[in-house]
Image 1 (cartoon, rainbow, N blue to C red):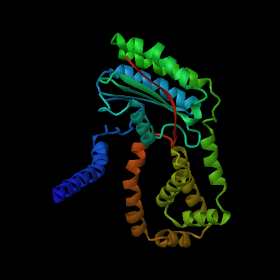
Image 2 (cartoon, one colour):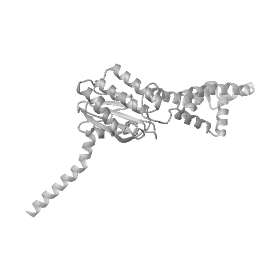
Image 3 (cartoon, rainbow, N blue to C red):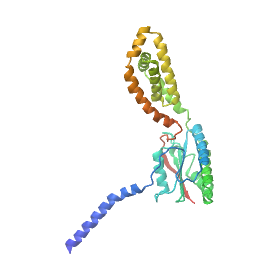
Image 4 (cartoon, rainbow, N blue to C red):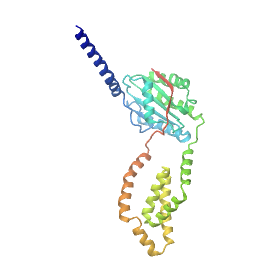
Length: 301
């Protein structure tokens, strides 16, 4: 009898132990996946028509251009039982809405089949979009329209209300990022600049242009500086060769860094990477490194 009870006790303990180890993994696997951030309005339910999405994204992009803040809309069918608040935080953390250290991002997420929604606010906008204001937007602007089946109108009303609040907030100017990029260029040691100039003179014109463009991108990440770097490379190469004897200029151009090796290795590598850069700058959307402050409001209809 004692042995039987001991055996059953051991079995129960093992069951509880295995369950405690497996359950968290199952719960994690059951979480609704966070979609990849590719645009400002993501509708996985097919509710919003293309024209409405274009209008919403244009308004949100205009705000980002003016203030630097980022707003993103996500509509999913369901969170599969996960509280809308928890899901919104996971999405915000994955998307990193708002500028880094400014944290001026807002996420507007709707779980259509669950009939729940959430406005999640970044740290930097908690004074502009308070919990009370977010709740009021949901109650007065969004859910009344959702109850009538007007999802497009509800989303647009919510976004417009958020834009209005963000516009009234004093935020760091958008131009600050460009100023930082310029300071980075100015802070390059003179020796490096001199060495780079000498290399540009040695290289063929096409290679100097390519190197200048790469340097412009590496130091600033700006397409404008990519173009300026390429032009500067051509100018340095052409003007510099003008101060060298003709034979020396031709010899240095041929031998410089190895025409075949430089063109095949470096040129090919940059060409492969250029597609990624072009794709990122060709209309895609990504977060700026912002964080959620945990503030905002939730609602249902």
